[in-house]
Image 1: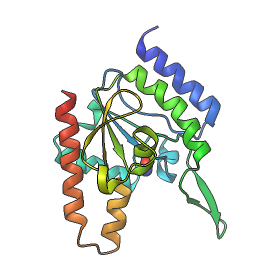
Image 2: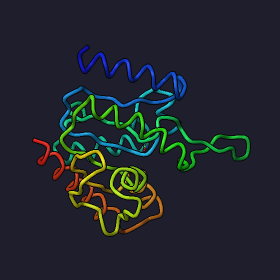
Image 3: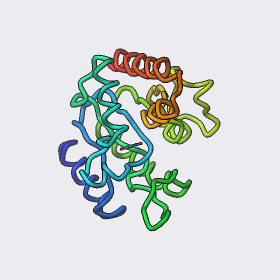
Image 4: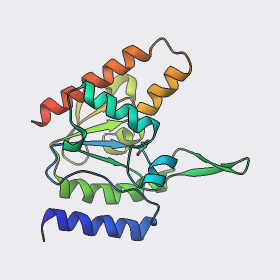
Length: 193
Ligand code: URA
């Protein structure tokens, strides 16, 4: 069985395990760089693709600024199901719980084994804590090439949703943080070549 066939099989088994609304990774086996987020949101579920909502569109811009073609990157999440809570009769996003992260990691490890990236970019502290160390903090670890639990080098950086929150709050820090993410993406891409 080719890696592509094994990946397809894993995608179907992930949908069987987590439900048809779950969102699997996107990209080609052999992609040298994998970008890993936390969990899909509403738009991702609507379109059945990772990182296609507001945060995803910002990720596209950041990749482009770093000179990286998204189609050459494997894009996925630790958690495959949108974590929700009800508020005023509507479903809102919530952070994933430990059990959801643990279950998602079981699939993610297999997913990355089949894709075979050389370097991981971890967006936000959920994938960084899950794949580098539970004590990881962005303040100390962001932008550094660290060893991940999967035996691959990994660089953690701010999640695009965080950048959007900083911008939404009128944060003067937005441009600086955004530039750091672009630099982290570039560093990871260069290391992956
Ligand atoms: N945020 C994530 O972490 N992943 C997505 O796919 C979308 C938003």
